[in-house]
Amino acid sequence: MSATTSHAILVTGAGGQLGTELQRCAWPQGYEIVAIDHDTLDLRDSEAIAAMVASRPFAAVINGAAYTAVDKAESDVVTAWAVNAMAPAAFGEACAKAGIPLVQVSTDYVFAGDRQGAWEVNDPVAPLGVYGASKLGGELAVRTSGARHVIVRTAWVVSAHGHNFIKTMLRLAETRDTLSVVADQHGAPTSAADLANVLMTITQRLVEDEDAPPGTFHFSNAGSISWADFATEIFRQSGLRGGPTAEVVPIPSSDYPTPAVRPANSRLSHSAIYAAYGIAPRDWQAALSDILDELIGATQ
Ligand SMILES: NC(=O)C1=CN([C@@H]2O[C@H](COP(=O)(O)OP(=O)(O)OC[C@H]3O[C@@H](n4cnc5c(N)ncnc54)[C@H](OP(=O)(O)O)[C@@H]3O)[C@@H](O)[C@H]2O)C=CC1
Ligand SMILES: Cc1cn([C@H]2C[C@H](O)[C@@H](COP(=O)(O)OP(=O)(O)O[C@H]3O[C@@H](C)C(=O)[C@@H](O)[C@H]3O)O2)c(=O)[nH]c1=O
Ligand SMILES: [Mg+2]
Image 1: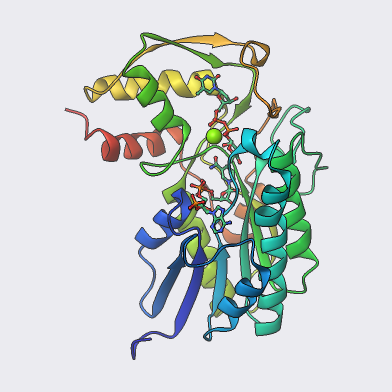
Image 2: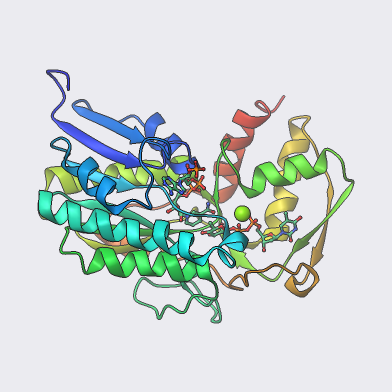
């Protein structure tokens, strides 16, 4: 730790979308981000998690890692629960012992998506698949761990890095003229960079202000669209940059069978995060534009 560092923040998922962006954030002076990847710490190892948290005087932990392969989780239940539920439990226990706050990230997939309107933080959860259920297990473990904590549920995370819907669409468009995309699942995308900034703000508050509001919050970019709408705008903005384009054919989910069932309504209300932290998201189109600037280059 350098002489000027007073707050070391342990971040998991260093190689993932969120972990990458957390390392790119403009953290305030005095903060040091200790970002660890899968090779450094396997989250299936609860004892290794405890040892890592106790290894130096961290000021907070952000658990940005997760088992995010939604379909694969359906047939890899034990690993999904180990990473998404048991690891947060181990972080909760270790953070409670160390007396430091834990920031956990969760998902819209804890909801069944069977109602209209945006989901509020206290709405009833009823995950449709193993991924959502295991993430809910992680939420419950953190809530009951005794650690001071914030849980941020987000949705449809995208960035210029890692695996995500934008990169999949651009890759498929390289070889196909038309793409069939589901039009009956609604939500809003979330820029991993915007989410990282939100988690930075909340973590800083938790570290510096013991009265910072704990609990569960929702964050995504602003808007309400279907995956087909998202794909259409990806190709419109990609085309403006000379990038790949394809015609999007809207289809029902029944025409795109997958092992895991996805919620029809993933819209997340921002009222709680605004009330507690004054955080209001920008529109998803602006966030998409920044990501395509990075992936393809700025508009000519
Ligand atoms: N992606 C999305 O659309 C959404 C994500 N979220 C949540 O946001 C958070 C961040 O997601 P995102 O950045 O997109 O996820 P990514 O899939 O991009 O990254 C997850 C990271 O977790 C790591 N990881 C997985 N298993 C282990 C393990 N056993 N030990 C150590 N590390 C492991 C992965 O490493 P490796 O690849 O080496 O296994 C990867 O670097 C997660 O909590 C996720 O559940 C919520 C809603 C939507
Ligand atoms: C590639 C493709 C996907 N789809 C559909 C499948 C799915 O319903 C939707 C999005 O595809 P994805 O593979 O990105 O879906 P998925 O991996 O389920 O995305 C989810 O990931 C987890 C980690 C979360 O927490 C969620 O918020 C959500 O972002 O688009 C098509 O209709 N056509 C296509 O060509
Ligand atoms: Mg996926």
